[in-house]
Length: 207
Image (cartoon, rainbow, N blue to C red; front, side, top):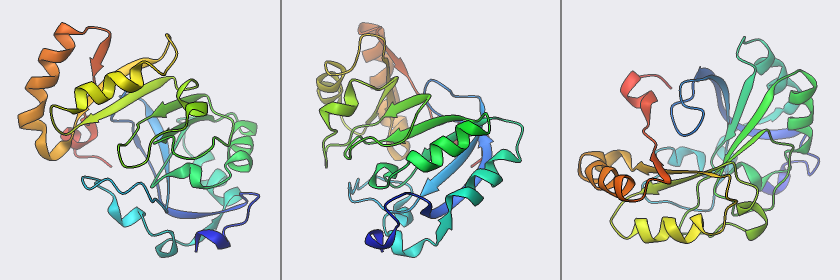
């Protein structure tokens, strides 16, 4: 199904779209319209949206219609996520959003070449498919999901590849939050260039 997506990005496999509060990372607490695209081959075993992996399960939707839907809401920020959104050409979608005065944010593993024009790039690298060096230097935010103790060393590996201005976040994997959060607290206290990101939308019981 991925191969049937037009290369110009005028149609995209849309899993869901919704207006909510950004729950994670640098922009936590801000109103945002989320566009979740189907399709991912990164394969994180702890992924909480595994239903997004198979692009064929999600209808090809006009990018123009997605933009129109987003423009109906007062919060003029869109977060494009997935799945892995950079599987697709996002130039058309982001240009049309920005024409409507909407800021464009992306959440990506960085495993595919960058397309689209972005006001903010959140890079969340995964062990199963490494991010491209061409993307790591462009990230405004590095958000590493911590599942076990070895992830701290892995986080430092990618912190060395981003720009000095990039914000650094450690986020506990939700199912292990009780176990992992105390370790993150200790780590951040010892390494204060890092900050803690929590999935506040789950505490607030919102999408």
